[in-house]
Image (cartoon, rainbow, N blue to C red):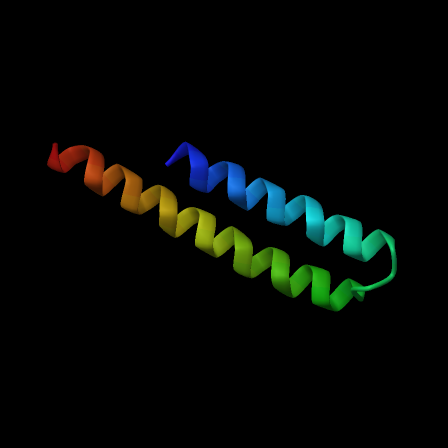
Length: 54
């Protein structure tokens, strides 16, 4: 689970870098950030569910 959270943070950093270098528009950054946040929330829920199963 930690590896997934770390990977999400790395992707966020790359998105921010791409935005700062003008490879991504504000709208694209907002859209991708929202999708990434949804993925992170779902992964956290899965982590909680799997944690209860043990």
